[in-house]
Image (cartoon, rainbow, N blue to C red; front, side, top):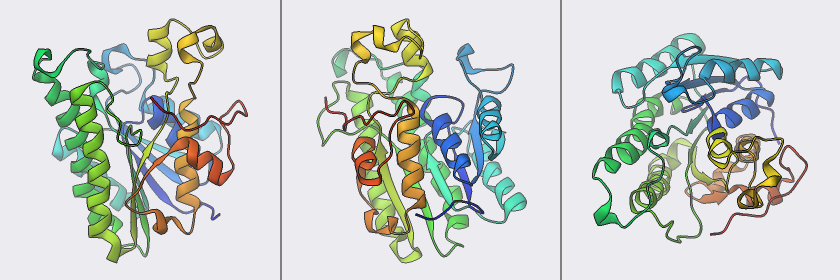
Amino acid sequence: MKSLTGKVALVTGGSRGAGRAIAVELGKAGATVYVTGRSTKGNSTQNFPGTIDDTVSQIEEAGGKGNAVRCDHTIDSETEAVIKQIREEQGKLDILINNVWGAHDIGVNPGPFWELPLTNWDTMFTAGVRAQLATNHFAIPLLRENKESLIIHTTFWDDGKYTGQFYYDLAKNALVRMAYGLSEELKADNIAVLAVSPGFMRTELVLDHMGVDEEHWQESEDLRKSETPYYVGRAITALAMDPGVMEKTGHVLKAGNLAKEYGFTDVDGRYIPPFTM
């Protein structure tokens, strides 16, 4: 496995949850990590826990290098400005983690498709799928200037099973297909493009919803098969460090399977099997 020292990474949607953990793990492995999101110190989206500044502080506490850049990825000019800043400050971009997901603002509403508001499209697709697509649009020209690069989309996938919520299912599968299509277009540039699916994560918002904290999560039966966001963070870091990652391009991979392949565990030392519904 290669070191990420000297590599430059961008993690979108890095204020909390998977994005925060991925950014921290990449920073610990040596990468200089740019972290984007809407939540900044003293101004967090809907007062959710976590900001991009908190994430960078955690990266630095672990001995890494991080840069927080406030960005609403539904606004193309802001996304483009992030890539311009990375070019000006670093001269390159090696790793892009497309994790931005604005649908946290509404959650996943239950009910059949015909009873759900059409505004679900805006949150799942405009603030989710299109936000990731736009980041690719502006970042790929910079990524193509390298001899090799990596793009990863975080998603949710369980061997094609229906997730039970129409808009969520449609959006997450669109991200899987986006990764596959880009993998075909970018093979000649030696850019690996993957989709990575975590299991049931104990994010800050999930813990709050369940009424527990990370120290007491085992008190909740519903969280029995859960994992921390650092599990997928370690999965993505292992992929970024793998010199043979190009062999996986176009695939959708589960964090649990990657843990078995690369030999890592969650932060509590546990191996959590791949999540199944």
